[in-house]
Length: 59
Image 1 (cartoon, rainbow, N blue to C red):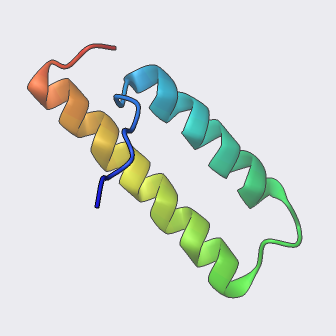
Image 2: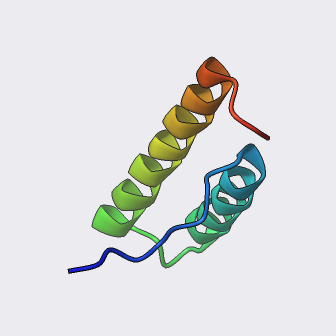
């Protein structure tokens, strides 16, 4: 089995993903479990951003 190639993670791509999640959180339909899922995703994005900064990877 061959795994699909993924794009490298950059602070730019994380910022774009963060904005998408932020827009989804602004949706009044995002309640309950969906809202928690989005908040967890925001936290994950922040952790990835911090990891990039710690490793000095390309921005």
